[in-house]
Amino acid sequence: MKVMIRETPKGYEAYVAKKDLEEMIVETEKPGLWGGWARLSNGWIFEMPAFDEPPGLPITVEARRLSTGDA
Image 1 (cartoon, rainbow, N blue to C red):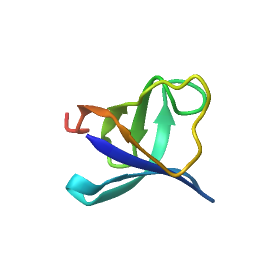
Image 2: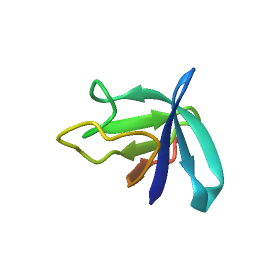
Image 3: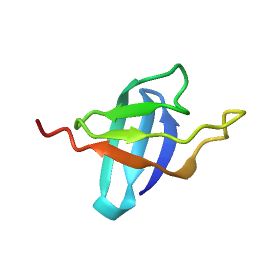
Image 4: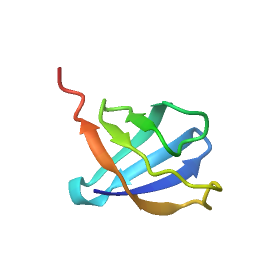
């Protein structure tokens, strides 16, 4: 699913237009953001694409949702 990532004074924020969802990224698998999973403040987890060089922000990427945060 398409996820727009931007940097705010509070940290990284993800926007999923298809769900009209805007949440802060609260945890990542790897330093930076790219090439591992990222957890949003609502509990959703996305597999983020890997980049050789960190891209400029804001950017829209194709990220796979791994979890909705529901137990």
